[in-house]
Length: 259
Image (tube, rainbow, N blue to C red; front, side, top):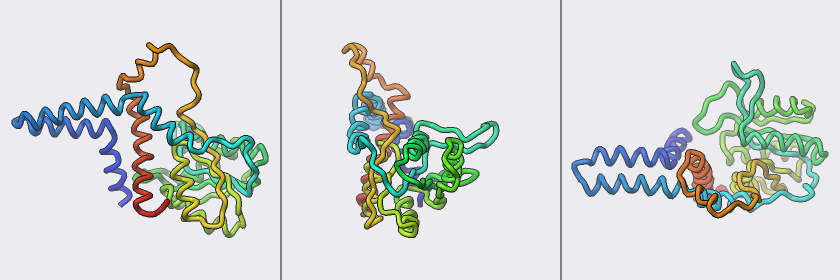
């Protein structure tokens, strides 16, 4: 089921959706009206989804719902949701990070600031993916590289999505007596995460500690420079796909009653 969900979601990404439309247009070439409709719908999809202004504002709406506390309060533990780390498989010499890897870096930063005495890394393999070992183990190894003591790290290695993170961590948090938790994940992912954890983990206070912001307070630029945002670039399409993933995920979770 999770694999099917992953495939269907990827088919809705702008580039995949446009490819489906172009193939449909080629298949319906003898029906000129239907073929042209598919062609122009593909062009319209690229223009809309590749618009940097639109993608930025949609991302801002998600990311700025939970801005970082200043100062960040102390808690019983720090929970870091999986994402953004790559296993130490040849020829990689160490664990590597992508943009979402900021989650682990920020979690280590909060720990070194004394915001909580324990860190929980949660995550198996992402939906529809494969890996040599659970992501939580890679996260724990990276934390040790960042000078976090091994005995301060707890791993949960069965969760493959946001709902499973909350469902599987609830008994762990209860067993350890953790009542106040700093929840670390990407800013764009935070609204869905907070909704799920607060719904499925009754009696525990979750304090949003977002990181990995895509939209920040930028330096003002000339008006003509802003015009380049309307050009559909690969970066704009990737950004829109990430935003769309979150909005669709939130809609699905709400429909299932998970948040």
